[in-house]
Length: 342
Ligand code: UD1
Image (tube, rainbow, N blue to C red; front, side, top):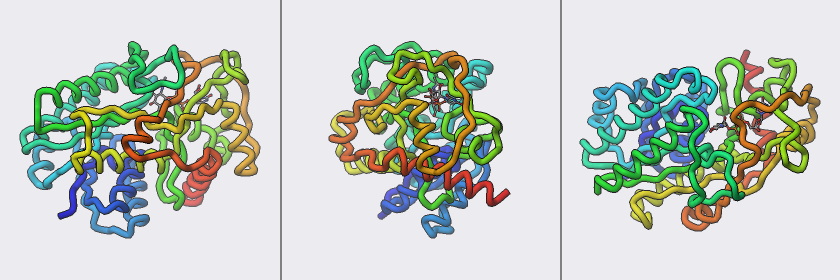
């Protein structure tokens, strides 16, 4: 019998790309989302890409314990990938209670429901933000986690700890936390991609919206960092590569290949790219000119962070494959696809 994976927050940017890769790898899925930060565009895209009209979709809020239990009653769930969370760093500083309540209670509900239904494999969507301004680069999974600079970042650390402690106490729960670096780009079909509401916080959606004329000018936050060109360094990971890492992690859990009951993997490329390099690559590969200006640093930004990916490469048998140029082409194709629909 096919194994079924619950994708919480599965209508969003990362969840939709992961849904495609899970289906392509032969898993059944059920997508659940409260649609608080997306519409059905990406879920419809997933159906088109996979040719599967019958993907179960449940509109529900993971903060609603009864709804979570009903979901586990209705489907035999072998693994859950938990994406359902708020993710805007600045908003989390302004509304900490909202962020802690939403991000923690939804995850606790998933764990409680899983425990009440005979256990489950749980993959938590974490972030490189847990490393903060790392002293030694690249960061390995053993690098220290530094105190979070935002409630959003703190919820990632707390959820990792909740999963670690639960796995220790409950033999029916196994867990993997994937620490993502900077996911960018879109599916090569241009049918799914990032769909920020309002003004984008992240770099690549801001670039593509500037290129298409929705934003007048891109601000590059700071060119006085101690880096080769003065702009920040990040590890930009292609969204489809990132999605494939989830399939590898789910397979590892379902096939009983885990070496410990709770494991952590960095999901990045291992290559640092500066903001200025990314902007220039975007211009070059897509043949467009971007209106941009250097402005002050953005508070809370770290100077540089990139991943040591050896553990994920060896243990998950996974490696990032797409080049930054290909990824930036896909991001531009997606923005043009959206513009064509307006
Ligand atoms: C941020 C979050 C991280 C989260 C991730 C989601 C912080 C400290 N980290 O990472 O927790 O998981 O988003 O993708 O907020 N930049 C510009 N102009 C812009 C936007 C960004 O110059 O308009 C620069 C930033 O200064 C940064 C780089 O581009 O150097 C990447 O920024 P962004 O895409 O927001 O990601 P992070 O801040 O790295």
